[in-house]
Length: 336
Image 1: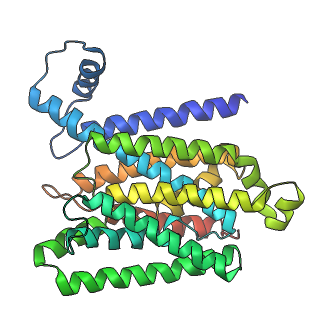
Image 2: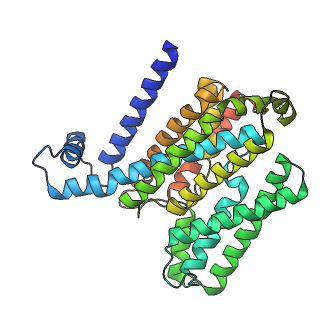
Image 3: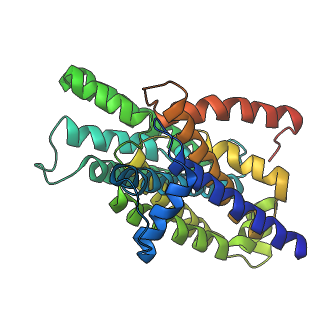
């Protein structure tokens, strides 16, 4: 018990350091003391005398960006843990459901085809597209009647379909500027994140984590397959339906805010298992914290690796995540 408490405190401290670093590090370095004073002024009206420009950058831009990055990383990591357990596939991640591809099609429909008549934002279109894609994938999987394997195959088919639709629309109808903006968004983009996005992302991340954690014992039972879980009294169909719906909602929400970001839901769960084991009561919060810290770190790199230029965060997660996954695979072959 003491070890678990110590690990939890350490993980929270790492997350706090990551959030503080995300607010302090950027194209213009801002002292950590300024970050702390800015937060104190905003939350408790501390009255510290600060440069208005520095205070505005910290509060309106960097803290909001770091919090959304943390929520996105935590959500994708939790979804990866759940899907890998339910589907018993070590390569399962949130985008296997076709949600990312559907979100890209929704964003293209709004930005290029003008769906919604100007009442839909890019994020709203992406969210609607993600839900439509998940609905089609779920319907196809249910009609096939092949369980977890059908979800994987239907997700692959759905991803290919919606990616093809996106490419077709961009090629046929987009201007050069529209195509550039869509491609940048598809690679993951936190540049436009502000506080309204925080108020959407954080509740979804925390609520999704809480629901998944309530099903931790059921997810443990799935380690030996759905038949074994059913023999232990787990309501298999209800758990499948609830967990898939929760992961779809979490992924769709995050994709609608920041775009498509890969490798977080694939790499972080395996790294967390190496540290805390496979019991989901501990694994889920550990993966959430690790995913949050990973995404904040990737965001910092995306803003600083090339002076004067911000890279899509999806590029950084892939550059870091692919070698990390290869290292995990070599050191401890994934068999689940």
